Each structure stands twice: as C-alpha cells, then as structure tokens.
Amino acid sequence: MSEQKIKVMISKEEVTDKIIQMAEVLNKEYKGKSLHLICILKGSVFFMCELAKYLDVPVTVDFMQVSSYGDGMVSSGMIKVKLELSESLEGKDVLIVEDIIDTGRTLRYLRDKFAEQNPASLKICTLLDKPTNRQQGFIEADYTGFVIEDKFVVGYGLDCAQKYRNLPYIGVIE
Ligand code: PRP
Picture 1 (cartoon, rainbow, N blue to C red):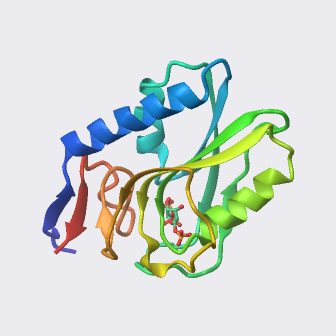
Picture 2 (cartoon, rainbow, N blue to C red; picture 1 turned 135 degrees about the horizontal axis):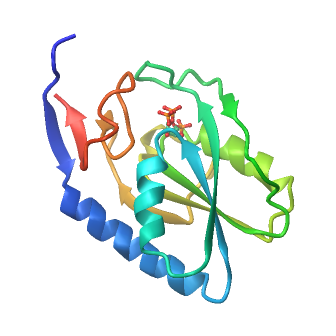
Picture 3 (cartoon, rainbow, N blue to C red; picture 1 turned 180 degrees about the vertical axis):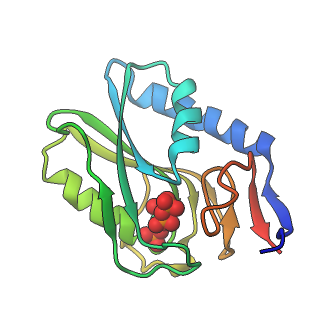
C-alpha cells in the first residue's frame, strides 16, 4: 500500500495544550481523592499517558482492550473484548479514558459493565468527540477535549488499519 497523505486537523501543540487544560480540571475535581484511570486499548494509550503526566492527584491505572472497528473504517457494531481489567473497581473513583467517542457503543457497553462493580464514582474522559453518528442521550463524556466533524481521523492513538497511531497530532487522510 502506498503512503497516504495526511492533513493536520489539530496540531501537536493544540493537543498538548488541551490535555494540560483537561488535567487542570481533573486535578480540581478530584482534589483529596485518588483517581483510577482505565485506558481503553489500543487507541487511548497515548492520550492516557500524556494526561497522567499532568495529574497531581494520586493515580493508578488499568487497561481494557475492546475493538469494534477491526481494520475497517466503519464500526462493525460488535464489541469484542480482547483484554479484561486486572483488578476490581469496587470503591474506586474511576475515570474511563478514551481517544474518541463515535457511535458511543463502546463506551456505553463499558460504562454499564464497569458500573456493575460498584465504583465510588464512574466518569468518562475523551480526547475527541464525534457526535454526528450518535443518537442524542445515548452516552456523553464528562470531560471532552475536542468536538470534531464527521471525518475519519488518525494520530494520537487513532489508527487506519493499525497505522498512524504514533502521529503527535490529529490528522485526516486525504
Ligand atoms: C475506537 C476508539 C473507541 C471506539 C469508539 O476503538 O478507540 O474505543 O472505537 O467508537 P464507538 O463510539 O463507535 O464505539 P477501535 O474499536 O477502533 O479499537 P482500537 O482502539 O484498538 O483502535
């Protein structure tokens, strides 16, 4: 496959500034508490690591891997669990960290699954929100970095057939 051309949608500086702002909000909201971050692999690992660097409350992390897109560009609608959490969420202040909410199916599934474990609190943080493909009220994030239009985006964890996750900006394949 030949190299695809990628146009910058949100620059590296804009992404970093936004993540610092999000961390400042979280530091205020969770002051005096500990935060248990759940990274939804693979996409959110870059965002979670960057966000965690700017948090000054005590942080623990865990990982869950689900996939609904495979290597395609449209959600299959089927959520496959590939890796489960390693510890219970009971009594913890849990923040689900996502790179993007599109249809909302992944997060709705995860939020309901995690709520069964009786966390002290359960909130959602996403770097990108693409609300076009979502029914209103289906699921909303508590903390959102950027609301974007309906374009297939890559970079900062987001892939196209597993490529481009490492780009330090959000781009669109032209
Ligand atoms: C992406 C993304 C979210 C989900 C959002 O994951 O990281 O988890 O899709 O889409 P939705 O709101 O329509 O459910 P993907 O299934 O592509 O797996 P990946 O993170 O490993 O790339």
